[in-house]
Length: 427
Image (cartoon, rainbow, N blue to C red; front, side, top):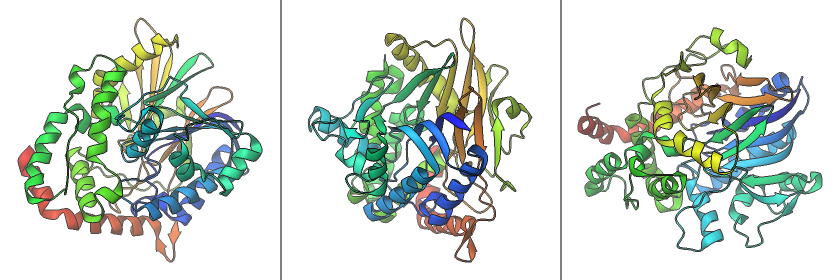
């Protein structure tokens, strides 16, 4: 099968709770992609979309992040023959995007956005960032200057673009819009609430040197540029680079945010096997395997509600300013790790299809990650590939068990702080 798009999000490479931080997990993913999308062989895809939180820049050491990210990209390059790679930043790798912005606009830059097609930093295997602004991202994700992934990019003449906060492309009468989801996180849409949490925690040093730099409020932003200006410095403060706030402090912060966003308590049983579902099949798939985020014109998923309220109106206005049609839309995002699909009506007519790619991080052994790969075939058929890790072995132990044991260890270190937060916010 030849694909137009293949998208993956929230790999969190380097974090011990991520399935894809381990060679066995990456090898399993590669086998599943080849088996379901490549008829057992290499998959051809025009666009490989890296949909944010790919390298874990906040909760993993630089060494862990680099090793896992390079291993993941090498596995993808061996599995997928792609003509163009598109990277969008998430919240856990947002500091890398800010570094890129500073390279473009000077050391005082706090944010930047691109056009719908992103910034083309590599064209036909040749770097186009003459100011070297893309150096860090190219080295971390694409193994520049001498790794095997980069050598393949040069030899095959691959293009690479960076896009933020969306990447959009028209295909077979639909506009495909990709975004990570950072701009409609609960923390981002309630920055004053999040500052209250931070103020509560800072006096006892629970989060170390934690400083919210943004005074904005997304509810007051009038366009995508203003939204980015509000959210970008806020995320950089919330999830700084590992070196600035390492180890246990980051574990506390990460799990505090997971609890406050309602992540815990969601249980997904391990699917017996990986399955590829076409759009037309999704209404018949049980919610406990592929959650229905929007049905009958009503949004059922809270993050998606925040998206439609605070993010998507700005996106539509932004796309229209670039003369990108918005009559028929497919919107693909990540961030929440909950995964799912849905359909919403568009005014004055038309349909918006929605997909969440989930994530590859384990929270406990009874909660199998919603690890989905989104794909669009050359004929326009849309797919979600649900990857099961139920029987994947890690040195004589189940990979699911190993990653959940790591998650349990991290939760134990959070303990008292989470109980205090729960009391504060009434959870």
